[in-house]
Length: 297
Length: 259
Image 1 (cartoon, rainbow over the protein chains, first blue to last red):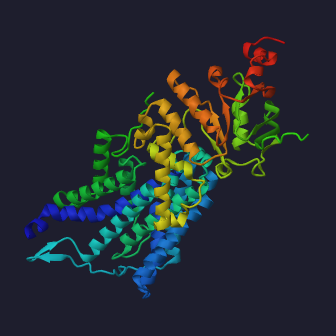
Image 2 (image 1 turned 180 degrees about the vertical axis):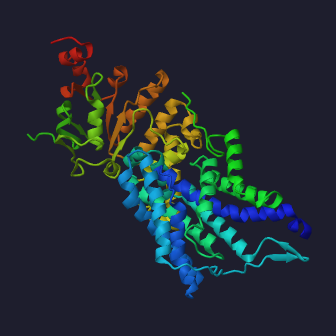
Image 3 (image 1 turned 30 degrees about the horizontal axis):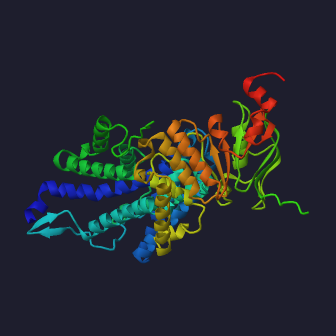
């Protein structure tokens, strides 16, 4: 068992899963917004990092780590709601390119604002769990208590979102409002409120991804840029509409990247997303978990 | 001798006009629906039936006139206020949520009921969980009442059109409406489905009023208590089917005969 866990294959697999869950979280947040408002939020990664900056900076000043996580989450939730109400709501019904342009601009604003608000700090954010990898008979297993925490937290958030959407009345209303807003209004659903809620929820998930990425690393406004690109591909692989597709896409990209890094070359790692995208487009262009809707008459 | 009290009105459309630029889609249209009455809104293509329906639902604001719901003391409601006000509407076609199962579609019709709030749902509190179970059981019972419970887990795209239409009615009934508005309920149905649907609509009369827009006269005539006939955006006749079927203005509108 020990040699199995320390084998190169399993080492790379575990490493891929731990980076894949973060990609999956960001991809999930993109899908939530796409499903609820049909907007591609190019500022998703930057918004998550902004929320992470607010909370994680306080860790350096001795504030309890968990309180800082809660603060980041609160900022993330609020930022999502404000962004929808102020930047996105006026654009409903306008050409689809408009919110894309606005969110690309917002990405630039956030990434410029962060360094002007917070002084650069190259120290890594302290983590609540040890980052030292476990050992087995002198061999390193690429798992640490902190990696386990990251994976469990990410999976917990994904599970919570899935339960909310699938098994609660709120989730049913959100899905209905996204599918057919006018019909939902007729049924008494307050659609506008749910659109805001979609952004709040998505931004909260993005903030938690920002927290996971930032913990154990030095804080930088662009920490999420590479992850966002992978997450965008993961969401596309899932068909943009499918949360489970986005999560699977994220994990696939993370694992592929890890195998390329391990067996091939670190220079080639960015190819992981492209490889997964090309294969998925060849096999199932509509998305790996997207259901075909056919009409029987 | 005392006069019999008229039944209370569920809906009163009063002098409603709708203009789109220079085009008048509805011109001083008035009609009403009493409690437990089935009223058919008919007329040739382009007569203004769907516009009238959309004004009642709040999809369109009237240029002048009022849509009153006397039992509620409310008027000119917006679409999102209809369900709470006891008004349900089905759409032309079926208007089901394609990615939601049949049972979820029907459960979505219970949104005007109390409970199922934001925080209780988000936190998974027991009160929310109890509501979910209650609504799910009710939705299943509703499907059973309409004889389509076996399709509960299917997606709308995989069920026959006639069944999908019944699902749309089941969803509307989940709001426990006082006024049911049916937009072309007979379209696309075969003979057996038509007779099935006619029985279903007749049965609704015990607990609510029904306003329906329909082209199929064979379906409408034996079903409704009263007809309101529109032509070129105006009401040209109103009364029981037996009277309307001999009305010269109506015959002229349908047959294109000049008076």
